[in-house]
Image (cartoon, rainbow, N blue to C red; front, side, top):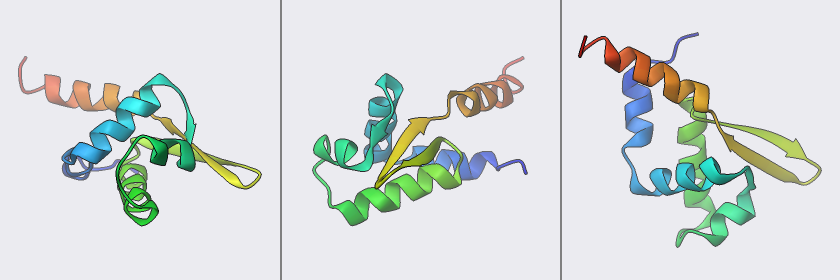
Length: 88
């Protein structure tokens, strides 16, 4: 199922989500590691991560008790490809 650009842009419209993506660009991280870098509650982080997951900008996997998040770079490539249609 193709995710609409509007959902992806909505997910990208928040400064906290920008910071999360910047962190994940460097390496995969567990929720508590991400939380160490942000001045927000666990509930707020959960909300932001869910927004990013719904937009398919991040993926996650379980390792025992921990949930590990990673950036989905191929989606950013798709976004750039979609936007390039407007400037060609």
